[in-house]
Image (cartoon, rainbow, N blue to C red):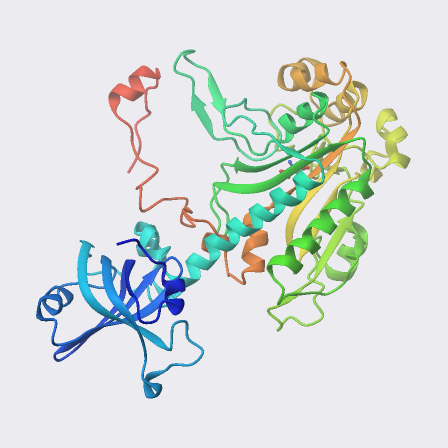
Length: 473
Ligand code: ASP
């Protein structure tokens, strides 16, 4: 018999059907057994009548979360048993045959409730089980809907999605890199990308004009509550644009996304207010101000842009071991100053007062994205690195590919990246990004399901020419 999805049962009253899915709940009531069955489309109550002795026997062994194929007759429930406001509340399945496709052992935790209360290590160790719960199903499906919507919108705006490498080169530009030993070239390493920043700029040099990517980014930072070693960006870059073009497109996309997929949410102010870094710091004491007029309202979305950040910031000792200067950049070394401050950059004048074209998009006090217009000429980019204290040789070694591209016809360009996990967390009213990532690491950077990170064999290390230092336990 062909499978019927549970959502379609309501049109099948009186018919014999077959459903496939999970035992959500089993209730033994003396001679009868009741079930709630669940599939990807919903829930239905099943009942095994005392007259079906063979089925009752099997039913009594079907534990919660067992996978079953169920044949039965779709019956209208008697008036007194109708549950209004519940999917299939007016029908039930009179089970005529039950096959257990995979019986479940006693569960490490209940999943037909909100699993938020369950210990995170246990949840993540059995993430596949956790993901079956209704809230987590909603989260992963809404995540898909959001990504699907973004892809459709951007294609409509003539963007193309281009994948960029995961095995790339370590360059000193931000957080610590994850590095991967290159077996074929002993003593050398790939690095996992902290973002596709350089590749997307090179795609502009490649004449792509409008690029985006749902991109994985990896940063080896010290673990802190809500950080993940890998996270997802909606990354984009556009040629021949100014700051307002990028901001307008992203603002329109965010509004369309919210209005289409989250109609219960209210955007506090359209167009999104723009606040200078200076005003944000003076008025809110933060460069990601929470401007909600009512913080109790879970459906209120207060977007704002923060602009006019200082490009450089004085530093006693730069984070970058290769740099000897006393300046570091605040956001992104590839950014361009605002047009009025371009001359000062080139003259290395009033460095601390140079403002960058950086724009951050902030939602309810969280930075959910940021980007800028870039320096697209050799001279300007080299000047930034000079101010940062890199000597010419190091600049060539680290960023030679960018500088070469900038000498071979790179158009003016700019872009942005959204922290997709954070945006989803806010849209789905979740307390942290782990709730919106299918397989996250714990706050300590571990995966209790795969049990990673984990040692590798001596043979693997040998092939990689790696000798481990003695590790204190
Ligand atoms: N690549 C930058 C980041 O990861 C975003 C951008 O400037 O486009 O923060």
